[in-house]
Length: 472
Ligand code: MSP
Image 1 (tube, protein in one colour):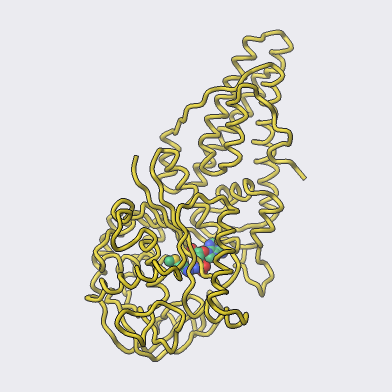
Image 2: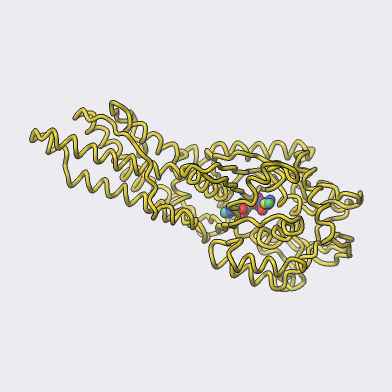
């Protein structure tokens, strides 16, 4: 049994959770459930990123005191995470006093690598990111992600000397000490690292009031990313805690492609600067698109995750994201694809199988079976490589195989011919196959899998009153 620490990006609380946010949670949850199944002890962090100008100015626009605004929105994320049945163990808010104290410790430890200088350049508030002149020119002065002109900044800042760590970070990425999945993202980061500049890590208080004060300088507030990235260790009680010793470094951190640069360069620089090991894996997912396009209010194609959840239920939601949204590339969410997956796979393949088999068992007085966990090496190999949708394909192959088996062996005909011993044998074999498959399914669809296990391990098998996935 090992101790495994799993982290997710913490969203800004300047709006409601959207369907894209589900990606980090579902991937991390699947990985966490897999490790628990293997008997590992799992710590699993989620949380909210509450400081910075972006959050502050949205609160102001809404005429709500910022403390109230962040509380309200942080609660919405907490609810969303619960609604997704995410098996997290720790929820961190960057406004938590323990977090603030911890980040200030990070800063103090980093001081040998910090210097002060003038910043004269560009900033994107949407990304909360300092932008180089080269990038400014390439994008003609406008952030492609946020469609807003970059702001001109001329101010005094503290800088983190990234150059102190570049070679060490490069070798960690190249050697796989900090593995970046998928491979093409690793190459992207190695290229970016080549001319990664030192980074500004503070803002003058007159420019940014909503943030963590820089220790020893009342005129400066920490840059929101230094504050936010530190959540991964503050939640374990950095600097002094047994949990840090036991759970750090993280086994895997799940992030979206847009924020990989902060996790592959800034975060390792901070960790190396304070003498900590690097996370073992950075797992990078693409973006969820709506009808092939980035979701945006102006295009009117934003998908409300709550609406989908309420309409189709959690298992269907988890299933679609984990099997049909590519884990690594950008992927399209459309209602049509969702409905097809629901009807053809969940209702026809799985729901029908459970109903048919349970009905046959009941009719022929076949009791449930004992179950023993069988994790196959093929399944584990895919899970260890974070190929979750392929692992789910594998599970689905087993479900289809069981459907084929039932069709070929025709237990109802055996019963009609009075071959009762053979009926028992065939049905028990199918039950065993289904329970074994459901064990693997628990990492993806915990509620459905448990329901199946309960049905087919009970003394008397009772078909569910309602099909597991009723068709509309
Ligand atoms: N606050 C920062 C993260 C700090 S982590 C120390 C942030 N917040 S965010 O709200 O913009 O994004 C949170 C997560 O959601 C990121 O992993 C991001 O990539 C992901 N996604 C945001 N939009 C997404 C999609 N449309 N699709 C998939 N993931 C998306 O960045």
